[in-house]
Every structure is written in structure tokens, then in C-alpha cells.
Image (tube, rainbow, N blue to C red):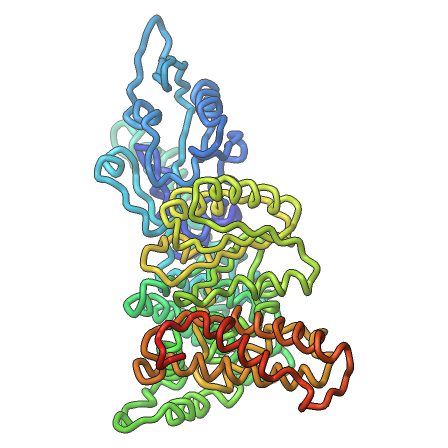
Length: 606
């Protein structure tokens, strides 16, 4: 209970890990993706003047020497590879000379205090630790299990929905803990008195009277424990109505883990799920209903909707229906495809999803068309937004247009060169304090830097400005670090399938102040239609086009600029222009030979 008050999660795995940390003979190395264990350690050792540092810290050697000399606790973050300077400490190579205990740190011998403690941590659950490191530390893994997530979900739901029940449960648990400690103390006192008797126990009246007194007190404590157990049983009955919701949370988390088998891109963590749950509970839309059963049903539906909208945007188009059908199976308890496996069209599967969740179920995900909502409401200053796109499909223009519309300062840097790495690090350090935005472009060109530097930088960010945002654009690549995928909120940006979807996505990118001229608006519609047809033909290679040309939305936006320029030169700024007077030939030639046709190399395609 004391540990839980210090921030340790209440599930059994976390409690077992807490015991291991407090009893281990070697220094611990903690794998903590959620960050709860690190917060717990900072509070637990607060009185021992615990310091937090990392190997990236320029003053690491100075901080380490001070902690060793003065016997304080040191917490080292992002320990994925061990700095050799720690070897003498981990091996406890203590030299005793003239009454002094010394340990070598780098090139100097430092006085070693027996009170010194070092805690190594990493937030990367996929960290690859060598046998050499594992043999010198006590490995403690706080990666959340399905059972642990169920327990944490239940606690969070209780705090939100029935805080009085949660408070009563904690009070009873505290009381039961105190009663257990008292009973154990009485038993140990009785054993001490018995072991101290010389001769026959029955001949010593003092011992007999003491045992009678202890047995009487023990009986009172056992009666109190029995009453506490009865009250706890009533509390558990009140809690049991929330159990189905926590079970659904556990099933969704298991589904998240199973999605990793489909693609390397689908790294959905317990942290991302808990953020979904917190968002749903914070909205309190289900509180509009008074009936408890109806309220719980609405809460469950809201969780599924939020999961679909957030996870769906991080899936490829061909996997979104699969995920939606799996959600439907979890929600209804039966598989929608069991009796309908043959000759299914896309519309049939869509109708099955709508039959399970309703017509407004966001199974396509809340993605690029809702970029502003995602940026301001779904992510925080600590969570980067990773925009993964198909080759040739650049989405950085979307972020730039949004930053301009919202009057946000956006610092962009093209990655791939050593100069870009230093610039990016400077931008992140500055923007995280000032509350501006940073965009790192084409990060598939520097996956080693992402893994070795960016991930650790993001994990080390503390106290960032709440308005700070970091956007990362990359092609879909299996070389992207797993740790970055787990840290980020992901939007997979593929060319939309279907003319309607392509038109909708294209016009959502254009700022509203551009639609002032009705004549040019009609030309914009023609450009949007042309762009959609060109994109759709790419799906039918080699019949649509003979090869995969890199047509992008940037081409279509450039086409709008061309139209604005040509119409302005020939017709001025008139609102209504006779269609016959529009420079059709110039528009057609420019688009055919330059804007779109510039990508085309085959004569038949041209």
C-alpha cells in the first residue's frame, strides 16, 4: 500500500517486481515502457536524494562520482548499451587501502560509500541485452501483461465511475494490511517468549499469562479481519459490475499484440491503450444516461469507437477491414464471417461492420483529413506524430499548411545528412522549451540515427512546453526502429482508394480562403477529378499505366497554382468569366507536359 501511494501500479506483476527491487543483491536494470516504475523509484528514494541522469548527459561522470562518494541513489535512463565506466561498480570491484574503500571510475579512484545505489532503466521493451550485461545486474521487467492491463484498467475506471467504492476498497486493503502486520507481530512475540523459557513452560506463570494475553489479542485481531473480509466481499460485489469492461480492455490489448504478426508497423503498447481509455473517461459522454447498465454499455461502445479511430489511422488500407471485423468479433462475441465466407464484396464486409457498431463507426480511422484534431487533441508534447507514407507520397505539405493556418511556428529539416542530425537535435531542444513545432522529413534515410539518438532524446524529454509538437515523416520501411514506433502516434498515409475518397482528401488539404473565385473553383474541381483518376489508374498496373509513376498531391496543388497564374494573366481578377475566354490550351499543355506529364516517360502513357 505504501508503494502504491508512491505510484507503483497495483497489479501482481508490479508488486512482485517491487519486492525483487527491494531485495536484490545486484543492482537492478528495469525495463519500463510505461514510465510508472521510474516515477515510483523517484518517489521511493526521494529521501535519499535520488538523482536522474543518462549516458547522454555531458556531466554524467561528475554526477556518478558524486553519488558513489556521498552514498546517494542514482537512476540512469536509456541504458540499452552499457558504458564500460560502470563495469567496476556493477562487478563491485572494491579496493580497500588504509581503511578506505575505493572503486575506479574512468581514470581515477573514488571513495565508495556502502549506501551508494544505482538503478539502470530503459523504456524500450524490445531492447536486446547481451548475456554479459544480464549476468551483472538483476533484470526487472515492468512490461505490462494482459492481466496487468486489466487490473490497471479496472482501477482507472473505478476512480472515474465510482470513486467512493475505490476509496472504500483502498481503506479496507490498508486496514487488512495493518491487521496482518499486527497478527504477525503477536505471533513473533509469542515465539520469542516461548524460546526464552528455561525449563518447563507451565512452571513459568509470567510466560503463561503472557501467552494468554497474546492469544486474546490475536483472537480480537482475527475477529476484526473476519469483519473486514465481509465488508471487502460487499465492495467486490459492487466492483464486479465493472469487470466486463476491464475484461474487454484486456481482450483489446491482446488484439493489439496480435496485430504485430500482420506488419512490423503495428506496435501498439499498453501506454497507447491507457491514453485511449483516459480520453474516453474524460469525455464522460456515457454519464448522460442514469441507468447503470446502459451507462456501462455506452462506455464500452465509446472505448471501441476511440480504439477504432486511433488505431485505424495507423493501419494500411487492406488491414483496416480486418481490424474492424476483429473488433466486431470481440464486441459481439461471434465472428461475422462464419457463415458468409464465399463471394464477399467490400460492400458486404462494410455492412457487417456497420451492423455490429452502427453506421457512424470510424473504422477507417481518424487520419490525415482530421490532422488538426489529432495534433491538438489526441497527442501531447511527449508523443511524436509519425506520418508513414508509401514511396513518392509526400505528406509534409499537410503539416506545413496546418501550421500556417494555425499561425504556428514550424521548423522543418530534411534528414539524411550529418548536418541535418545536429540541426534536428538543436530544433528539438529549443522547440520543446518554447512550445513551437518541429518536423523531421524523410526519416527513412537515417534509421540508425533514429534508433541511437532520437529515441533516447524523446525518452529523456521532461517538463516540455505543452504546445510543443514533433512531426516525423517517413516512407513505410521495416528499418524503422521498434522503439520509435512504440513511442509515436502513427498515421499511415496511402493514396486513397476510389475517386470520391481521393477528391475528399484533396479538397481537405486546400485552405478555405482559396475558394473566393467561382470560376477558378470549377477549374479546381476539374483538377481534383483529373488527379483522382490519375491516382486510381496506378492501382491497375500495367493496364492503368505501364509503370508506377510518382504522382503526388503536391503535383495537384502545384496545378492549382498554375491555374491561378494563367487565369489571372488572361482574365484579371474578374469573379465571373466566360468559359470560352479561359486559356484552356495553355492549361492543358502545362498540366500535360509539365505538372503531371513531367513524370511520364512512356509514349503510350503520355
